[in-house]
Every structure is written in C-alpha cells, then in structure tokens.
Length: 222
Image 1 (tube, one colour):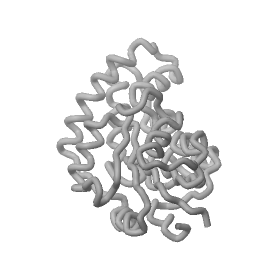
Image 2: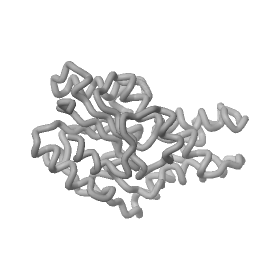
Image 3: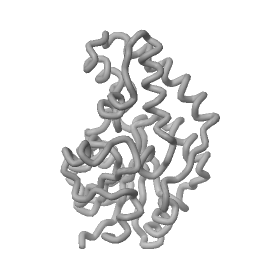
C-alpha cells in the first residue's frame, strides 16, 4: 500500500455537505442577469473551479457575453453570503470520524477549496472544525495565483509540511477538476467521491484511482 503522509481534501461535496448551495446560487445569479441555464449544466461546467472563472466558462459555453462575468460574480458573492448565513452545514457522513482517524495516524490533513478564505472559514465555523484537531491547514483560492486544475494548492500544502514526494500525497474531491489537480501534482492517489457535484460517468472521465461513495471509505485503503 502506498505510504500516504498528506491528504488534500476538497471541501464542498467532499468533506462538507452544503446542499450544492454554491451552484444553486451561481445558477440564480446567472439567470437574474437575463440568461437561462439549469443547475445540471452549472454542475457539469463549474464544479470545482474558482468561481469567477467558473462563471466566465459557463457564459462562454452558453454563448453569453463573457464581459458580464464580473457583475454576475459580484451578485453571486452577495447572494452566497446571505445563503450561508441561514444554511445548515453538516459534515458528509462519516467524515468527521475519518479526519480524526487520519490525524491519529499522524497523517497531515489539508482542506483545499476554490472558495475564498472568508467563505471557507464560514463553513468551518458552522461545522465547529478546528485547526490541529480536525485538520492541519486550510488552503483556498486566495492563497494561490492559479486556480485548479493547476497543482499550486497541493504544492503549497506539500511545502507547508515539508513533503517532497508527491506520491506520498492523496487528493480527493467530488469533481473532475479535483482529480486533474491531483494528477497534475503527481499525487500517489487520486480519489473521486460521489457525495458532491458530479456523477460517476462524469468523474470516470478523469480516471481517478478510486471512486467511493464518500471519503470515509478511503479508510479501507489507508
């Protein structure tokens, strides 16, 4: 079995259940701007991406005006903040236990996300997850200059914990972009989970090493 020392885990849909509120909010913000797009299309196009980039890609795909992206993104950010204030956020089944077990095995756990650090922190506060208890570090879109699928967040996580060999790193996420990020970093294991944005046939396109229902199933291979 691979000797994994660092787990880089995506947040929404992988460790945190926030009921797809982000993609529902993207859909709303785009449609309020005079476009017509469904949640399913938003999930396929935008899952895992930094959100301004996601909105730009979506507009390109539906033949919209990419110059609208910034205004839509600003509207989306306000809406999301409001949505989050009222949202009940839960860990995905079995995740909390899984994190504590990994920490007990002295593995480093990094949460990474295409969100801003403000939104990510809001989620963690709602879950009452604490650094050094549930995870070792949080790395967000704010910490890097290139968003996923660039391996920059994983490289930063490795640097933080002095891990030089990417084969000692596991990357898990619920979108194709998460898996591509892991592969671009040369991770020893890439795991896709079915608890979030994309379904099995979407995820299979990225050729992850494993596809699990939830991240806690990874315990059996670690």
